[in-house]
Length: 71
Image (cartoon, rainbow, N blue to C red):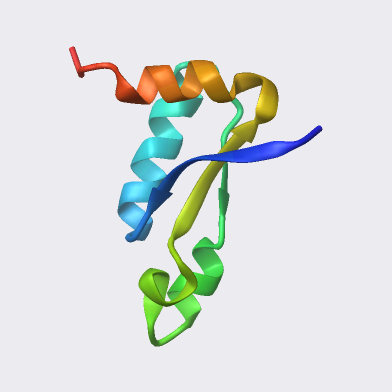
């Protein structure tokens, strides 16, 4: 199973909020690089962001979900 990045955050809080939204909507998200960002002095910016990822088969639907206006 391939996983792909559906969202890139520059704070842990932002990444976790996106993760929670996707999880609550029935997707199977994964947060990558969060520990590295929190342990480095330069933070998420220094490593290029914290990645929220989903299985490749869910990417299009997850991207559409995140792009939809909040109700």
